[in-house]
Length: 171
Image (cartoon, rainbow, N blue to C red; front, side):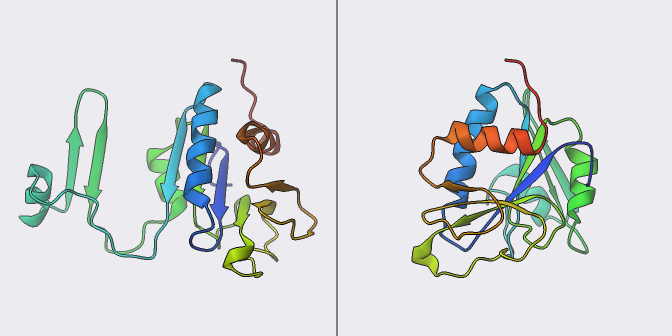
């Protein structure tokens, strides 16, 4: 494991419903009083700063790192020479959370839940992954991991995640 903070990754093909499900899971975890962090992995080169804003202007001028700070939020924009490893992000920035939810990272050795929709084909991205802990989808793929329907009550999904990751909360 990367840190003492429990981590679970939602994986699956594009348009399988990962983000929609993660949003529901985050809301339920917050209702239970947990501090939740998320990391979204993408293969695309994205610019996360807003064009025209002062922080963007700082970056455009050549700053290698820009931090935006307000009374209750902060954001870091940093140029990297190489891909930042998941372990480094977790240990550097996310050590004080109750759970970390990832979207993607299908090749990392961490617990994964595959979101599987038959309309996207019958092939799963992590079918043979030893770290696959469950499948959430529109059809049970008949595997040796728990299956929950995509339309299941999100509380059941969160109960499963918390049980698997051994997260105890008294709310």
